[in-house]
Amino acid sequence: MERKSFAIGNKTIGDGKVLIQSMGDRKTTRIDELVALTDDLARMGLDMMRFSVLDREDAAALSQIKKAVSVPVIADIHFDTSLALAAIEAGADKIRINPGNVNSESGLREVIAQAKAKGIAMRIGVNSGSLNKYRGKGGTPVDDYFLALDETLSLFREMDFDRIVLSLKSSSPEMTYALYKRAYDTYPYPLHVGLTESGFGVMGSMKSAIAMKDLLSEGIGDTIRISLADDRREEIRACKTLLKALGIRKDLPELVVCPTCGRTLIDLKDISREVAKRLDYVFKPVKVAVMGCPVNGIGEARDSDVGIAGSGKKDVYLLFSKGHPLGTYEKEEALARLFDFIEAF
Image 1 (cartoon, rainbow, N blue to C red):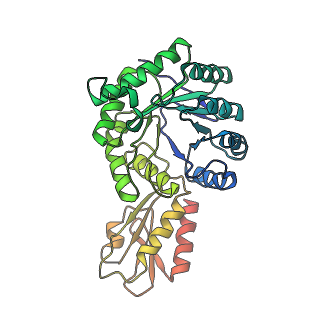
Image 2: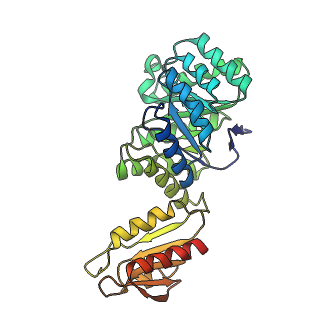
Image 3: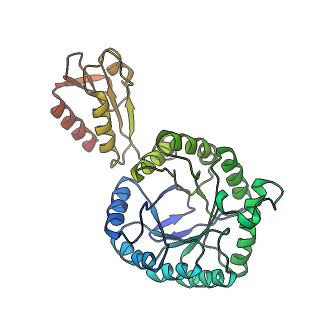
């Protein structure tokens, strides 16, 4: 099956790369805050940003956001197809609709026609919370999703619209795999992969990784989001960590951190977080270690390009590279030298 590939704003989907997506976490009319957030996430590696459109004011705000950010803008539409038309007029690069709550076929036809005329993409996003009239009608829970999807897709196909992205989200990792595997085998369209309602922090990241690991390893997934009830920066960190661990992204740093023990005489936990935040904005395959003491530190991390470890003396830090010591320093100088090494790598 030949798979579809097309542009969404200044990005291309379906060309073999896995793009990272996130979503605004406040009302879209809070333009300045969302522009600042989107800009920071883009510096961290965000490829696309989605925004809720609850009313005409949100739709209008997209126009100003679009002018101010460097990544494609996606409008998230539920219930009211007139808001999708307003978002298209405002310059959205993609429209996301949900088959479970689009109640006007004529309205959806108009949205498809306008999207086709403007050359923008649309995502058909089915999720477990909005199957509504389809629930229990397909034979199995997985079949319910495809009943909703196929009914909507038939309208797109009738109107000869193929700039389509599909998503079928569940809060179950096992069902998520089944849904996306079947979608990949059935349709040629790019897939936006993710687990919905996963939670926050470690809980949400772990569940999402379990759901997405096998899919991504099999080449299934063109955009991803690890949806967390958390700071949106955590979503980007989680996505990058997953793509790095799976070997899909080769341009990302790796951070190795010792778990600490009673031998640790340095402020390792705070330092490791400071290093991690600096690496958020680094796009090179540098391996960095933060180790607690010289007993295991320089030996266990000998394959690291650069590292910082406790020297065995309180608040004295050892810098090393590829298992060889570079010198001992106080905290600020040690970190400055570490960051200089990463910058020059």
